[in-house]
Length: 280
DNA sequence: CGGGGCTCCTGTGCGC
DNA sequence: TGCGCACAGGAGCCCC
Image (cartoon, rainbow, N blue to C red; front, side, top):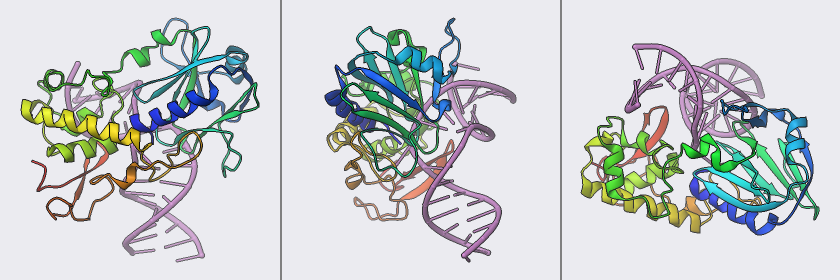
């Protein structure tokens, strides 16, 4: 579900509502959502409900941050909860009307609740004693909206890569936060065929790609995210991005630019929509 | 190392 | 109506 604009929308909603509050109770309905880090920094493994509660109860929220598609709920002692929503995760305040159970619900000292719903159960949350040292976060590439995304950066990172540019845009270790929807839209807007080997794209075309990525992500943040399927914001409301995307989800329909029919093909297992007239 | 396939899950929509 | 399969916003892991 959530890519950068969706996660950023949730972050903003939660920051406005939960900063300064203290976690007073935690209901764990699905312990498989809980992961943790081994003391030696080894790979994350499952964490027990008992240990998770012991680590988190009583802590006071200082900030909400986002890095790529990760959401960081920072406490006043610099420890943190780190969420990844994967495909269908939702974080919703004071939700009482869901048709399926929350995996985890956090209760705060003003009686507000934050529930983690996740139909496909790919999402996860873990406690970090120092989030700035989290390997998963430190491995991430640049933030596309903070000024570091430039044509020269792409030229350097794409150098010698033979994989389709669509796959490379999804690599979170290069640019953090782009998912299938925004990769499809950016490549359409930039006029680049998604199959093009990343290393063979000229600098002027990378410039168009940069501009497109930034424009689309910013516009989507402004419209509070893409809500075709399960995505909703922290209040359970749908976003509006789906009303202006022009390629994603439009396979079989005519391209508004040239009238050709949008095609759809698999690239590394992902469904990629493109216009064979507008994208070269 | 880079790239592609498989895997973790559940729900929906389609063709037969 | 029912069944089986393909597919859905992600990303770590494994093998070549």
